[in-house]
Length: 55
Image (cartoon, rainbow, N blue to C red; front, side, top):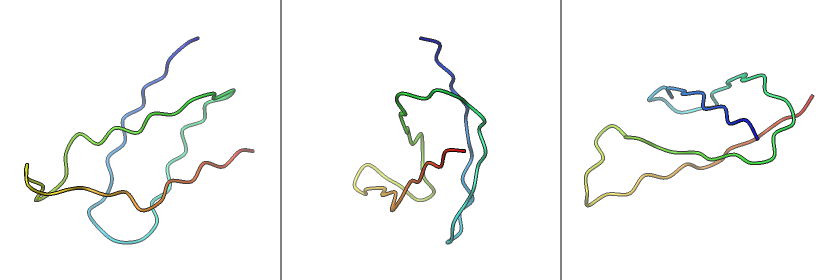
C-alpha cells in the first residue's frame, strides 16, 4: 500500500474550507492537527466536521 501525506493549512476563519487532493482508491484517512492558534496544554481543539466526497 502506497501512503500519500498531503499537508493542508486551514484558514483561521469560520465556514467551510474545500481542498481537492485527487487521490484514488482510498482505504483509510488519518487527520492530524499539528497546532492551533491560541491552544495551550490546558485547552482542547475540536474539528466539527470532515466530509469526503467521491467522484
